[in-house]
Every structure is written in C-alpha cells, then in structure tokens.
Image (cartoon, rainbow, N blue to C red; front, side, top):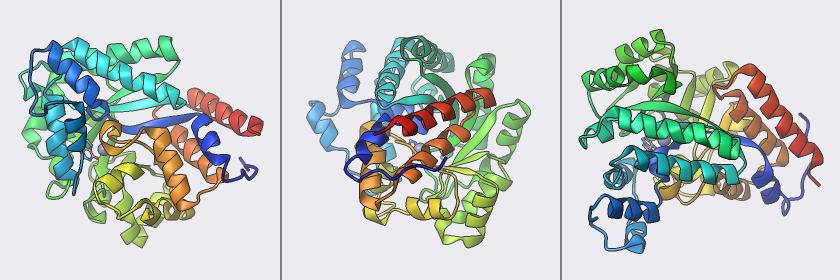
Length: 345
Ligand code: HPA
Ligand code: ZN
C-alpha cells in the first residue's frame, strides 16, 4: 500500500497504534526482575541479588554470552506449570498493549529439563497461556521450540523426542543460544527430522556469526526465516538471495545495541536492509533485558534512523506475511493494518 507521509512528531503515535506481529522473542527473556523475585519467593528460593534494582543493574552486557549467563540465572526460578503460564500471560498482556495481533513465541525445554523439570511442564504452561490469551486479548499466540546450539546434536534429538507427545502445541522449531563456534550444520540431521514431522523451521544466524551461517541455515537446515541475520550486509550475494526469495529477517534493534552488535542505533543497518528489498521485521528478542518491548524497538529505531511511515507499513506487512498464520488470517491482519493507516490523522 502507498502510504501518505506522516510528520515526524506524529510517527511514534502511529508506530504504537499500528497492528503488528512479533516473530522473535524468547519467553524467558520477558521475565521482568519483579516477576523473577515473585516466582523465587513462591518457590522458596533465594537469588544472588538482594533486590529488584540490583538485579536490573546487572543487565549490562558486552556480547551474547555475557547476556546468556545472566539470562540463565533468571530461568532458575521457573519451577511449575503455573510459573510458565504466569510468565507467558504477562508477556501476552504486554504485547497486546503494543497492538501485537500475532505472536510466535520462542521457548526451549533444554534449560528447564537441565533443572530437573519435565518438558511437559514447560509446554503445557506456555500453551495454556496462549489459548487463554486468545479469549482475553484476541491475540493469536503460538510456540516455537528452540534447540540450544551450545549443546550436542544428540541432546537436541532427546529434546525433540520429549515433546513429540505434545506435537500439536508447537508450530515450529528454531535454533538459539551461543552462535559463534556452533554453526547450523551441527543440527542438519535433527532439523531434517523436524521437517519430516511437519514443523515450520527458523534459526538464529548472523547475529554475531558470519554470513556463512546464514547460507547454511538456508541451504542445510532449510529454514523459512532467519532470526537476526544482520551480518548478511557483508555479503552482497547473500543480500540478493534474501531479497529475491523474500526470506524474512527477524531483526531486534535494541538487542543488537545491548549486545554490542552495533555501537549505537544510528549505526544499525535496518534501513539499508529495507532499501535492499529485504523483508525485515522489528522484534524485541528479550524485552525484559534489552530495554523495551516491541513498540519501544519501533519508536527508538525510527527516531535514530529517520525511517518513514511507508517503512513502518512495510515492516508491519512483512511481519504478517512472514508469520506462520494461514493465508486467510494474514489477509485479515493486512486489512487491519491498511485500515489503521487509512484512518490515521
Ligand atoms: N540469541 C541467541 N540466543 C538467545 C537470544 C539471542 O538473541 N536470546 C535468547 N536466547
Ligand atoms: Zn533471539
């Protein structure tokens, strides 16, 4: 759709009001320090941090691994199905407030089975919250299970085996955790198996890792979307491939700044990705840790890069088109998006 120009001072309002899909957020990364302390209290656990403020102050990272270490501490408070439900409910309420109509939520079971929980506790808690959010907020939420790439192929196969009885509660499979040194090829066989089982496939690639990891996520794992993918900018042939095949990138600008992938938002390559015809989207990744939910990612990125109302529409349309919703549902989302732009004054 051709969009009328919007004055820069009105853009934040449009960005917030605009219907959108969120395709890249890790549910454990939505655990706010307040909820971490609440869950620790009800599970009789003590944390290494005396209070909410001191925990929040620890959220300073030099790279992905720094973050993953603290993020792991937060996950230890999740012990019961109700804990997983409450975490997911809190995120979906917050996403609804940001006018997210559709959320595809990353989770992993390996962190939690490593803490002695059964994978079904994780999946059932998350899934029940997704079902309830449809009635409570009208938001469509589904689940993507990520394998942890720092663990072995054998452990990924075990994680898959454990969730097969819950197959209907999971739409897709992804790949997360420490990227460099753990290329997509390591998971070629387990992704092939997931494909046979009918799961939709995505993978983190090119966040800190090289363009070669994006090529192999596409050609070896055969994923449909790339999570992050910002390092593609260093490989012109890859940029053409992504644009020509309309392979979506789920970009997470505030995450990239917090993890020092770019020095500052004004250096971010999202605008260049859009100019190259790549189907980029904006997402929050781990909103409790990286300084904001999806609308904060939109408003800060637009301010820093001077993006336009036309690009706002494109980013939202990309998010719906790249989602795993049925085509008829996608059409309804796009109608709501167009309606928002037509009535915005
Ligand atoms: N990258 C890789 N793994 C993750 C991330 C991320 O940004 N967030 C949570 N797990
Ligand atoms: Zn991520």
